[in-house]
Image 1 (cartoon, rainbow, N blue to C red):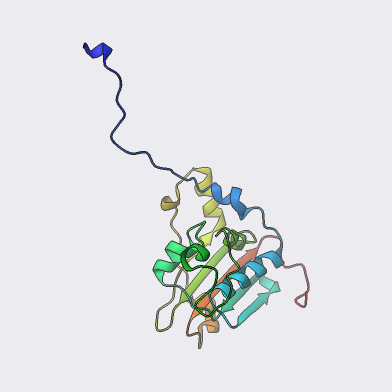
Image 2 (image 1 turned 60 degrees about the vertical axis):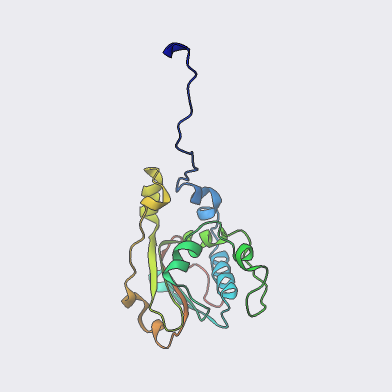
Length: 194
């Protein structure tokens, strides 16, 4: 058989899926606009992490707020492979209930995108018992730029959070997560009582 008559062969290298960061917008980053929806999602995450308390500190003057919980907290591996993994579901890994018997609220692992929808920057720190704080900053303008340049998720690196920003919220915080929402996109228009 002559070289011209040979059939083309498939490359031995396997094909894999690649996901653009723009999927974050399609799945929900720009779908959630309600401040109360964002609060509800953060509280649901705290519930699923076995939190007994959630504190919400609102600073209307600076259009920012903190959400702090006393849940199980996250290790750096948890933060990367669970919190930052869109589509991660505790139900798939742990069944329908937590070790303490609570039914999990989260289902599809995309509700966390609501947390990115309302602020220019979202800083997350978390710790487990006897652990150190870990976390990162999700800067929505940087994320927008990464989407514009069609970067893959592993090409967009989170900034390291400044622990001083969290001030005394870290005091006596043995475990759990604290999230700082900076520069709320449409401001905090409702009364704090609302």
